[in-house]
Length: 113
Image (cartoon, rainbow, N blue to C red; front, side, top):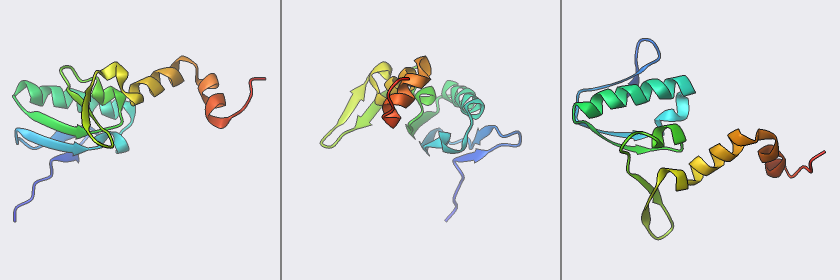
C-alpha cells in the first residue's frame, strides 16, 4: 500500500502539501506558532486557487477565518453550520485578547484587586 503524507513540515518550517486535490487535516495548528499558521493559510490559499479542497478539524480561530470557509460544529445530536463570529473559539479568543486580566480573573476565580 502506497501512503502519502498529506501534511508535512517544509524546509523553512513552512507547511507543504502533496499535489492531491482533496486534503483532510486534523488540528494542524497543534504544532504551529501563529507565524506557522499564517504560512499554512498562505499555502492553503495557493492550493485552493488550484481547486484543492480541505476538511480541517481545528480549534484555531485563525484557520476558521479562511476566506469562504464553511464552519461546522459537532454537537451532541447534530452537526450545525455556524458563522465564524458565533463559534465558541472565536468568542473566547476575542474576549481574552480584549481584556486578558479580566479573562484570567474569571478563569481563575480571583476577585479584582
